[in-house]
Length: 161
Image (cartoon, one colour):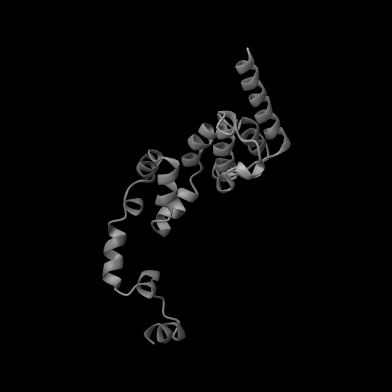
């Protein structure tokens, strides 16, 4: 009821006060948020030490962390370059298309994991589509399947030699 009263009277009230049960607790939490307290360079240095999974988890911690992580392309670039070891063509194509590092990683991360599994021979003994682990598969283009087929043929040639 108090919220409606404040809105109806067009009073400016901070988001913290409107969205939290205990405004003092929210203010204290804000004061303990290093993203808001430290210089941006220090915050980036801290976040740059995180692996992909930890960076994604940190981004859902609170709005300020999400905003900082989501809008800091430099945090995503090293992870993209790691994925590029497996998906070079895909990453390079996305770069040429003007995608941000974060979007490139989102577009190619799962594909890189699946492609790596195929290229390493994990699925060499599969004889039927039914045997494929459906949960970890993802769509791949013809060029990617060509790379996988070439790697598989090289593996077979080595075994026959």
